[in-house]
Length: 503
Image (cartoon, rainbow, N blue to C red; front, side, top):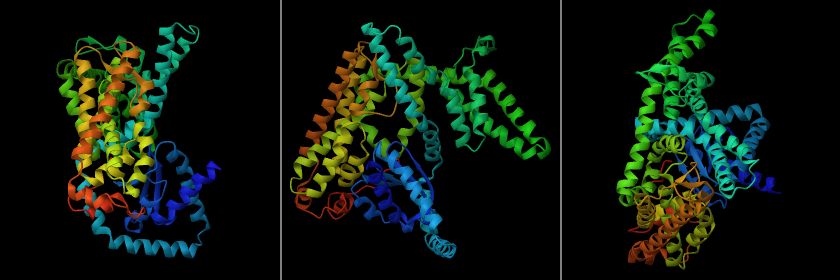
């Protein structure tokens, strides 16, 4: 029955994105179905947003349909199957005619698409998108291993199952011990090289035998440089490989290219990158600790308050390697629990909007459906469905995040650090991953207190300052439930509808 429901969702989406002939690629992340489209003009945006299972849409290099965690992983295979079935059933003449029509429409919309790409394809944003493509596929393993590490720590503290805890430690630590290899593999794949060669070069970093090698007058240590070293080594391997493909004769390419790629990149990694990346990694850990130890409350206020705008601009992706580096070094990242307070401010904001707009059934329905996901740290439905289209409530949500971040940061400045053993979850879903320099109970209490403050301040700021009188008069009325929040905001003076964020 559930399978049929997921297939029904996929079947309702497919015609609204132009059918199978318009779909060039299908992938998914934690919350979004990401589609490559031949012709963007064939997509029916408002009809898609009106589907009950669609929480929002985001346009970037791919067209992204927000379905939420769990659901997207179930709908995507059904969507792919429907695409294949539709292509297989289409007669050759129909396929030819569809291709011709799509080409004509694509030509008509080429100028618009080119302008949109130029606006979003700045070198910095493209770089951050690549960073995300390297690290995001690793998040499920980070979450799973992080939760197992938390369970193991609890069992050790309680002195339960002493015969099992070493096995759990091995399960939890195995992935982190070899994460450099996975980063190298994904990096080479993302930058257009042979993935396994990127993984092979990155594997040098975690090889125990590097302890017998000296560089810059110091003995190397296995894992030195971590994910940053692996990223640099794999990028270098890609450039060496491309140079070889260009100059090495085809007759000996299969022997010479991989050998030179691994040899040259490996030597540079051992005698340069490992040391440099190790120094950078150490600097990141030192800087993060100093920041929270000396300016904890202020740093928390700034980080918690600015994280939602960073997500809007796609700049939050730059933090992924920093989180991963801190987890490698210290066993947890002290930044994620503070940044998670932004989601708490968003939840408090949504509850205030629900209270203020008592007669707007459409917005209240959106909030009721999106709020459970918001409590679990999935903020996209509330951002794109409620606060961002309304404008001012988005700002008050940031105020709530700033308050929660300041609370957690204050305790860090007082000597009690709150960290997360993995990246990805936030909100209530982060509790199983919490870890700090004091007991688990204290860590959870501080994090929970930050959430409550974020909820409360986000609610109060939005309730009292989130709406002008004109906005309330226009929005606090019964409207058609099929009308999207962004359309309502566009029709309301004083309620600007910012362009959806590129995440």
